[in-house]
Amino acid sequence: MAPVSAGPEIERLIQLLARLPGLGPRSARRAALFLIKKREALMAPLAAALQTALEKVEVCRTCGNIDTQNPCTICTDPRRDASAIVVVADVADLWALERAHAINARFHVLGGTLSPLDGIGPDDLAIDGLVKRAHDPAVKEVILALNATVDGQSTAHYITDLLHDREIKVTRLAHGVPVGGELDYLDEGTLAAAMRSRTPF
Amino acid sequence: MAPVSAGPEIERLIQLLARLPGLGPRSARRAALFLIKKREALMAPLAAALQTALEKVEVCRTCGNIDTQNPCTICTDPRRDASAIVVVADVADLWALERAHAINARFHVLGGTLSPLDGIGPDDLAIDGLVKRAHDPAVKEVILALNATVDGQSTAHYITDLLHDREIKVTRLAHGVPVGGELDYLDEGTLAAAMRSRTPF
Image 1 (cartoon, rainbow over the protein chains, first blue to last red):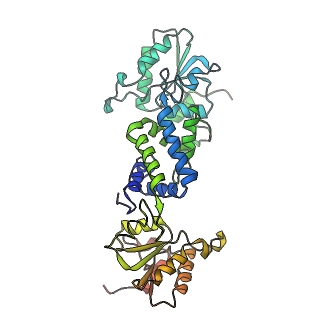
Image 2: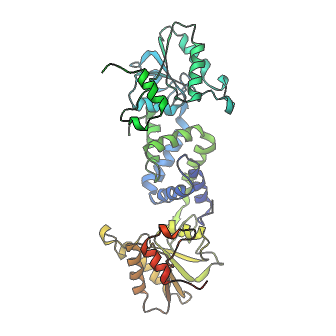
Image 3: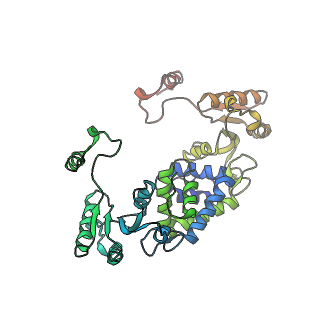
């Protein structure tokens, strides 16, 4: 990235912004200029918010969610159904399910999916912690909310095998037509799965 | 934007990131998670860089550029040709010309272009300062590097009129075919301008 003749401090800010997902060198320059123009309204609050997050954000020791309290808000919320654990690969997936108000249960963040090609094995994921939590007699169901990819599904199979001897229901998200989706644009695998799992109308 | 069940501090960070140009709510969430994961490698340096920029970045009192010194690095650089002032609407345009190594001269940042519809008149731009700088007998040329839009061109005309009585050359950027551009995709105005300004081969 060419220097911007604006002092090393601004260049460094641009370089750091360019490392954020979704921002390239050009949009990082735009973002830096925007921040400098909105000094009081945006740059100062953002600097403070980053500093606060640095000091306060922790990984929940129970579920692997990130929060400013530990255990996290979800794990300590008494209104959550403690009988179901929703297993997700990543905090982003947890957030997505929460935004959808998909379920009022607890979560378990694996920190990724099994991926032999990338050298990610069971020991790299928070699978031990999940098995320990599933020991709790209050837990009746483990819901595998993993991506419908090869890695996601092989992780789901691996976890299902581990929990096989428990008196516990292991479920996964339904496959089917996305709400608002058009059949013509769907892949054959999804259409076949949606047909197999058809429901009374 | 739906809350993310991760504490008000993380939500605030996401909301501030979402206000950056090029980031929407979804990419702001991704960026926040990325920052939290790259705590030491990215979040801490970015917080520090923003704080440094907050403390040090100023608008150059001569040309309107932004820099951590005032007057800016360009205005104080003795190797720059002091006989030409390149007039740009915005610091982003200055940076673009600098990246292109387009010219080794000084700049003048107007802070926008005349735009009667948006209520932006001559008093809202750094035009007075430009006229004062053009008084300097060392200045022989004012180069109008303004956008080839209606607002940019009317600003160029306005400045040309103001400098009319001076012994000074007022020039503007050439119109023509962008380097690497295909004729078939160019608008008629550009093609006509490129034909009028054709050069010996």
